[in-house]
Image (cartoon, rainbow, N blue to C red; front, side, top):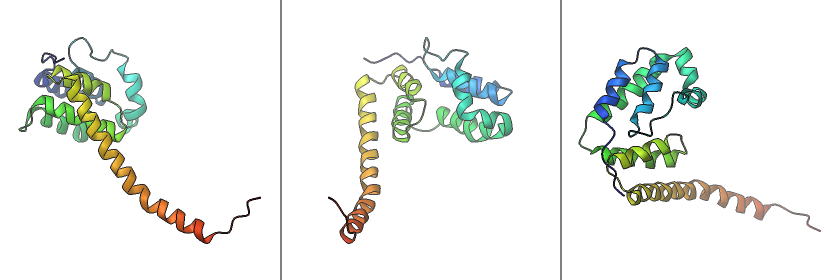
Length: 155
């Protein structure tokens, strides 16, 4: 089910750039959603747990590390907005991070189908699984070697 484009990146970036405080910058993130699903004013409650310390103690991190680069990425580059959103969904799934619902709805708002979202998720989970296999393999081999040298008293 392809959605119609309802996320205006230029308007979203404009809201991010117009924000005067770090908290306002974070609150502007909610406008990345398609019309009708933008986060409510209470959005800050969840964000405070994750980025509140930066808002309170280092607002420049929000401005220069998050908002400005993200705004530039959204407005520039050769990738279509739909592809950018699908990549964001996949990366957030792989990172086990927040924002998956927001970027899923934004991907659909940019014209992605549910099948395309699920394919991006499938690819992320595939690569995440491979990384887990590669990371765990040497530790499991070491555990087998340690077990072979150990003496167990099992009655």
